Structures are given as C-alpha cells and as structure tokens.
Length: 342
Image (cartoon, rainbow, N blue to C red; front, side, top):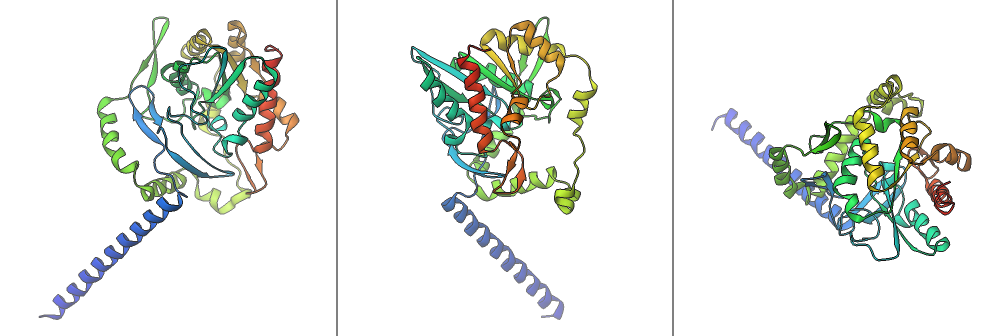
C-alpha cells in the first residue's frame, strides 16, 4: 500500500471519528435540553387563517432581560385557558399588542393581565376575565388579522389594543402571515401561499421536536438582529433609527387600510387604544376620536409612575416593561375601567 493511500485512510478515519463525536455531542445536548427545558422548541405552528399560531399546550422557558416560564393553554394563547364560550354575567377583556403585551419577561402571576383581572374582580360586581393575546412583533395589520380570525371568537366585551408609532410601519415581511387588501369599502384578508404552508408543515415534524435545532435557530436570529458594532461597543453603541420608524415620522395621514382596520375593530368590540410610548400619529388619534374609541396616553402616565419602566436591575438591560411597570400598567387600566372610560 502506498504512502498516499495510507494518508487518505487516516484522514477519512479522522473525519468519520470527528463526525461521530459531533453527533454524540449533539445527542447529549439534545437530551440535556429536553431534561432541563432550558431551551424551548418552536413556539409556532402553521395555521391557515392566522399564519403563525402559538402551539397549544407547549411549555416554554424564556431568558431575556427578565426570565419566565409558562405554558400556552389548550387554545393557543398565554394565561388561563378561558374557552371561546363565555359564561353569563362575565365581562371579558382582550389584550392585543406586541411583545410588551405578550410579556415573556415575567411570569403570568406578575403580568399586568393577572393583576388587572384581580383588581377588577375586587372592584366590580360582575366577574371579569382578562385574556392575553399579545404577540411578539405584531404591528397594526397583524393585530387586525389576529383579532378577526382568532381573538374575536372568544367574544371579548372590551379589547385593549396597545400601539406605538412603529406599529404603523410596514413591519418585517413574513411570508407565512396573511395580508390585508382593500376591496371597495371593505377589507379582505388574503391567506398565505398554500404551497408555502405545506412546506412549513413538513418542516414542523423536526422543528416541533428538536430542542437543539431551536437553539441554533435562536442563535442565527440573534446574529442577524445584532450588528458587530453593537457587540463591540456594548453600552456605548448608539443605534440608528429603524427604517420603519423614519417612514412613520416622515409620512402624513393614515392609509385607507389603517382607517378601515380601526373602523372594523371598533364595530366588532368596545375598542380601547393604549398609546404605549406617547408616539401615536395624531391622525390616528383623531380617527379614534371620530369613531368614539378612547385613547389612553399610557406611555406618558407610566413615565410619571415608573420612570425606569424599561430597566431591569437583575441583568442591567433596558428593554420591555419590568415588574414594577407591569403593576403600574394594571393599576392605570383598572382606573380607566372603573371610572367608566374617563
């Protein structure tokens, strides 16, 4: 046997040994993640009507500026599993918004949903149920679709829609999410491409079971969302305004689609808009007044009560509402409801 053949054989054996070792490490890591649940598999399943829907019954653990764990209820939203059928004498309040409402930074018992429900049940004669339909990254359009195809079936008497200026931008395009089109004087929700949905359903066999794959995907998303400059400069890094924020600041007026979405939601429920950071377009607030939709200046009121509402001492990070802010949000909303919306 020639020297060249011997060298090739050694290299092949080394590569096979490395591959087997890597596979063994991956299997051990997968077993560890499954046993400890420090990593959560894919949060979503593909749904024909709402696109990305939360997986009913999934136990999740989230580490961010805060920490929490919980389980999506059997209906696919956070908090107690209140069914679509509502008992007589029950007042239902649906919370709708983005990651601030979803609130993965705190346990449900510390979330403003839980505290608001507790306060209202102590001060009102009727039984009150507060349902958390917040979804990370949802803008006005996605909230409208989610309300129309999912939230509305739970028969909310009141719906609190949490918005800021960024929710009027185009948002991040998601091919798995439906879109909204205007036809005559009405809105039409266009479902995602069926062929694309079918491909993702096949992928769910792996993403719903592989904890290791979920962790690698989270690392990939983090690498995309955080720039090298932000990592190197850390707290000295000064972020540039996002394109969607600049678009909102530069444009004038509301689109016809936005006006119709607001009108449809106000017709379907007792709608209340919470301005989360005092940045809602004046045109939108005017449209709300024209439709009789109250707008709570939540951002301004919260800044007075909790100046450091976004700061987390435990991690030294700034991000979503902290525990003190959740208590304050619950108290502010409670005051609005018990005063009869004044």
